[in-house]
Length: 228
Image (cartoon, rainbow, N blue to C red; front, side):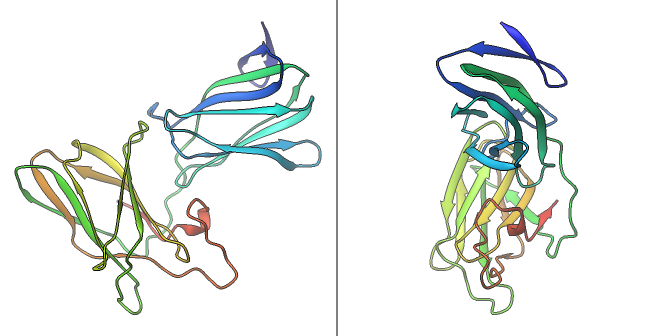
């Protein structure tokens, strides 16, 4: 085993194919699921491989040729992290260990959702999704509730634009609403308490993407609000 000069000790393991691996975490040590990981060839600055951090917080990229690269890791709500440049030799797998992403700046929110709670037998979280201008409901939107430890629950809005999570474990969550053709709506922190039925007092608003903009769910441009 030897070590690469990347600003910190990184073991380099011999293997049949060259590659990279690691774990992405936030400042609390919780894994950042769904982060985009790209390998950029130097000096061309061209992405040659990419992957997404899995439910356990890990990533692995194989099949790289020997050469000089940089690693770029990005996720909404966090500062983009770039590691490198570094040299990858033939037959090496660089293990970056835990790579921490710093929280990004919070933009001005166009809408500040508040949550009302009432006593209930079981905890729950519900809300409604609409278009801000027409006030039409948005059905079929995907709503993801993640706890930062790799556990993600998914719901879809019904014909009334409503969604509900039943019996979630008490804790703090990140909520993301996505639908093709719309910019994402993100709430960075929602607290769910045991024995409380929680509901967003105001409807969550999805804004149409500009024409010609794919506005994919994981693009930073897709953020309409990062609040609370």
